[in-house]
Length: 379
Length: 116
Image (cartoon, rainbow over all chains, first blue to last red):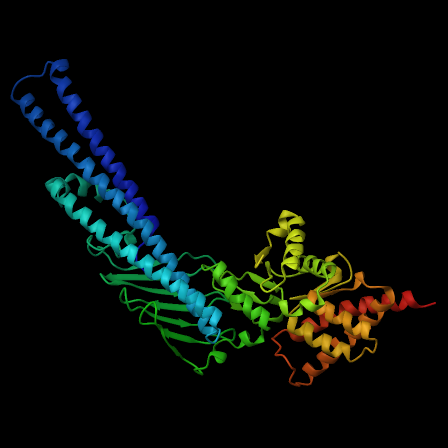
């Protein structure tokens, strides 16, 4: 996972923009005041001359900071956007790869995972290029800023007064290591994760994520470098098997199982789905790449549940279309919505066009609240 | 999921996993002789549930009884530890109990309706 906090970086960019504007304003104000003060106050002599010299230098130096600082802020903001996209794409790939894994190398899941891998690789490349641009911009601007931006200069002194989250600097090539490279986040919500981040090296952070909730797994992700992350996912307890994965690259994961070594053993619940329910899962995953879907282990919880504990009820099996009866299917939709899970997934993949059209019309006629509970696939 | 429903009231509807539905239906069919009843269960499987209130009263009574017997057969097999054709999950006993309770309620209603 590319290291760093896009939100914190954007805050930093905003702070830099504000600082740049402040320096510009200071330069202009100083020049204006310096010009008017001797006349208005009738201040003359050595002290007045010394002040005029100081104020002139100050206004010139302060004004000179504005442009390069603004460019750095723009680059940091640009970098934050690429970082956010890269993190999302890599997370989506990890999620898709995990689903493909537990599916027993189902071709549909693999196809989704491969697509996600390509997206992730492109996003990571774009992020790295953005990092190079930030470094270049910082280096180029540093020459302009000179002593003003040096360790004892006003910018550093000003920045020293700002509260900046520690992870802001993590993983930005060219901006050096964070002063204190260990970060501990503990959101503290009952079901929320505890996250330990230790971004210590230039090549990338180490991340430990532990979800202590009743349903949630424990996940340890350790990515020592950009190109060869190691991922360890440990799902203890009765609800899921333990999985150890070591993908050496985005496109070619090497996977080891800590238990039986068979895909069927990894998620025994997967075998409890019908063919149509299994077929819907990768399509659902592709539609929501940011969610992690698992097969429900309990009879009461629908077909699938996600990483937030929401349950998903699946409808749709093209194999049974020979017995198609619109009125009964529509009533069944109503009953599903009335009784079942957080979401009802209606998957019409493989259904005939007229059936799809009928169901679409019916679903569109439902109240908005009920439509919001329906996830449409193949419509 | 599959659903059994007797009205638009949520209290008259029960939902459960489709694998359970299929196993109940396969057992229910063994308690039926009329081909139209057996076909109706196949239609219900395609609709992923049975809406008993859409059926004619006589067929509804036969199917409620057959589905009740099918659910009871499955419950007995699970209780005896017999291997079922599709795997079951934790909570199967409670879910079958819920299904049987709903069917029982309307099974008796149908019997009263049919009584002279």
